[in-house]
Image 1: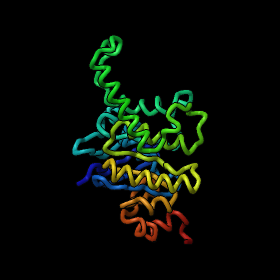
Image 2 (image 1 turned 90 degrees about the horizontal axis):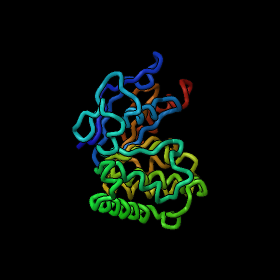
Image 3 (image 1 turned 90 degrees about the vertical axis):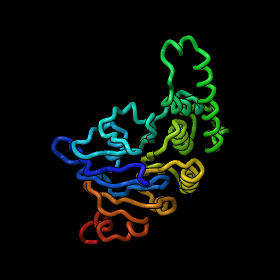
Image 4 (image 1 turned 180 degrees about the vertical axis):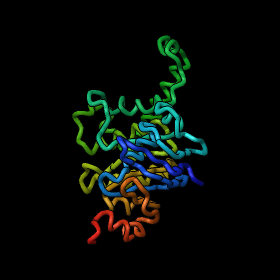
Length: 254
């Protein structure tokens, strides 16, 4: 069963097609990875999925619903969460407060209820806090829960951003180059977290990644893209050894 599908999706900037006729499906509860050389359109695909960009053509279906024109602020409540290549955290807030931001995607109270701090609001805040603590335990962030983000090592901050995304209770988690800036040990730990997110939490993972070791370790299927277009879909080994993929990375002479 597919949780996400793109059909002939394109987007242009100043006459240049950043994504051109992109079509692929992501199955329920798999780790699906997009690879490709720099400038291939990978992050543009994520920006289309999170509705930061509008598609010029094509259709994006999520959970059986057409979300091609859905406003960006609705995507988290639909069940899509993402991380970014460059960390987007509140540097002067604690780890716990950063993670709690993710829980507000499912907030149902209005301004007056919040100001009055009604019993409904209190119960919701308690539930959000409990779930945030569960995520902190799940990702082993207990030692950092009250630490200020700007004082933490880069690798810990990367995990905090994943924790914030998980706190929105997503059905689909978009990870944009999660291993970027991590050392070998941190990347190995990341592989375990991704596997646990998929298997223990039952969350489908769609990832953009350059580290082929990580790609091979966690991915069920891989899509290679180049110049905004899909090249080939298959297992990590099938894709890495495909002639078109080798040519895209190394050039015609290869």
